[in-house]
Length: 581
Image (tube, rainbow, N blue to C red; front, top):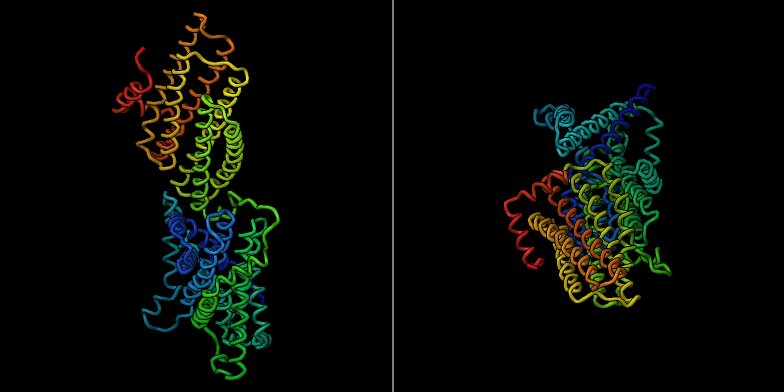
């Protein structure tokens, strides 16, 4: 093996790792919506969690990516620690799919069918199709499909290049002696763990081992301990991702590590006894692509069969190693680890915006009640909700901007725009709730009251605003376009009602029925109520725009007002809230 073979080996390794990374990232994006649905159905049943982990990892071809997602889910409160254990175990088996795919590179024979199954026969076609989709397709999903095919083609080309480059090592004594050393199980485990920790992918590490097996110098006795070590090394990614997370997320990373360490110790002990006592001939035979894939699967399945029934013990161990803190720890609302799967991150953002909508609307309605009966406890709740809304707007706004910088589908991009607009409106609604509260405090503090006619008018307007808030919240949470179309007619009624009440106040002032001081409070209340209705209108337009993929608020409002049923809805709300004078 000369210097050119070494350079070829390095080039093949780089192509292999690059292809695996590109293919994995594209698979995550392409499977994103499916991941949302799978995780939404996740139950506390450990078998369901196990199957989820297996399926997700088999799709995205990376147990490291799955476990990093799991750490993020636990940190965000999407998943409990107990749920995560089954998913982590399933991920260990799901990752073996990659080795089986790579084993196609070891197919040999003159049979036409066998030749067609060899990656060198079909990867050029995949690369051609992938290039065409990537360059010419307009849909992001099709582009991701093209990237998957290109990544796979590059991966297999790198694998083939590595195998050709190392073939000359078969006659190098030093290489032969190195793999004789790896027959020491502890040394083999250490080498497998270190290599995998460096490249942070057990799938890639197994692929490299398969490429080295092309030399014919890698025996099963040396390969099996290395495979065991690779399972430990892949834990480094989850451990690193757990830094800065809450205690349960750290425990999920510990579960991943302890599962692989305990499984390796037990089965390494069994392997060593079998090797020493029975001395199977198989262990001295040269390993091949398929044999390594089989060994990888058998080991991971054996670990799961052994430890899945004892998952509660792993949970207790993790809790013991990461004990509860003295003070109550708040669960992080958003986790940057979720950004690796934009659809899941977007789903989490949508959930938080719905929470923000709920407490903002609730706070405003509490403020309306304060106008009739002041309550100190409710006042504290309103101010707390306003502070929470400010916090949610900050973290959601920053997070959604970061999310928009990732490769997202067209529909997800529209949803991000909708959420970015909606959080501003819900935050302003919470601000207006505090303004209403302050008006109620002024009325109480100064001992002033509205006239009976004014009070009746105010109650009528408050009823209309309360209804439009309910409509907006329900339409947003349920993404109900038809309900959203009911909001603008009511908002127009509220605008006219406000002008009628303003004019009525001016007449009362002229007649000496109320004071200037009361007028200031009255004007503030009308302004806050009317502006709240405006924000509800904005929310409705966001819902309609996102459904129609038309982010033009002026055009949407014009279309709503020109709709066949607008006048009918306006008349219905006018009869309800604008009685004839």
